[in-house]
Length: 582
Image 1 (tube, one colour):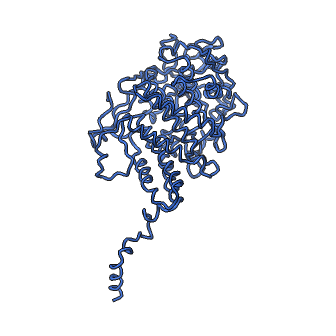
Image 2 (cartoon, rainbow, N blue to C red; image 1 turned 180 degrees about the vertical axis):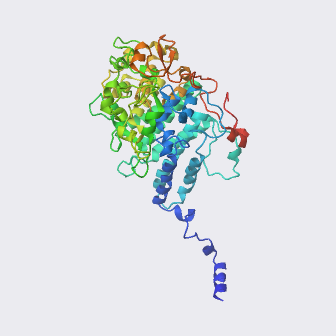
Image 3 (cartoon, rainbow, N blue to C red; image 1 turned 30 degrees about the horizontal axis):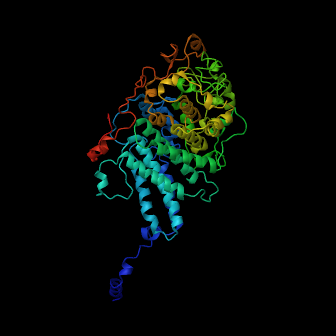
């Protein structure tokens, strides 16, 4: 009888039947407080740690995956670094221009759509919270910054891409639509970035937490994205390059002027450049805006150990781009000592070279190889110690403790955003706009040079490096691009820079290493290197790829600036089409 009464009561109480279950999370219970919004947005950072699927916020993958996914490895797709392991074949294939249309999503490619879905769900649900619009806008800004960054990365690789700004259902028409034109997507990206810059906090009140995006990070991200799009339009064809370059310059300048960051310097030009790249804790560093922290015993990586064995060293092209201490390139400077020995390479050169590539005399300082039993460099085939495929062993990030720590117990950090990049973004943007002044150069390039005690760049007396006169740009832009290559080496920019500048021809040049002659054969006893003749000098150098599949790089101007759409995606939606040449 009482059971029937309860049924009668419930049947008359529609509100009761519509009540949200008390033992589960739902839209009716979750989207209520600022804490709920923060918890939801925290998930974005967790998802963004999957670098191969959500690559904009690059760091090191954790655990075993740190052997192949990470910001340090990205330069292996360019002419900066030689990849030295089969696990890095993806980078080697991109470098050599022999990548093909994939069956499915590849590293850093056509993936991460679950991340986008999470962003769009949040942007639809924030309105449910019982908080002020100002608070909601903070979290909307964070989500829209991620979305703009995510889509800019996709556009940079695939061009046209389907724009989605709402949660999709299985029958949503977007799943079978054509790709959205690049210009339309990037207009949406800029709207997201502008909203983020206007609404995300300068600080989240967390004492400068290393891992949360703030307004200054948003400005740097905006400057990076707008610089890419502005130069892409300028060199690949577009009607609005100046607008994008102006947005890049303004965003970078606001960060430089008002962000409160400064270049890391202790007044030690021989060590300051790489000192903080080898530190384990970057909280409080005046230059670092965003970095990924790893915690001993909780969130760890093995990247340093893999790095010492999987990268084959820097290239001759990279090493030769460092200026001499008189501020001139090696092609013009009477201070250049040549490359007869590796010691000669370092004589009278930008101190950043010796803080990037191991000088034989610095083995003890860095405890390179964790042993004093061997003399460096050591090249392929030599017995014992750490070997390099080029002979130019990279020291910029080397930390001996992490390099030899037990498997997956390291907490090597990854720097994602730093002020040095903002300086370079700004000076390049104003140079491309034609509005650059000596004051701009002093604020940026010359500030970076001051850290390492290098001569200033003078607009009235820019050197003309004969190696770059055929690039179709001014000598000043040559020097700005050189500074970017040197300062940001191994920070993941070079491959994208060459694509946006339409300088793919540089990827068609063979990578080389140390000079190889009778003296080198005697010095590097036991070496089994392959060699090749440099067509410019006629001298013989180590050929790190030998007779492998990557020995003769190519670059097809008609297709290699963009990546192909995977076959699996086209088979599901033929209207996506394929990128030119693929």
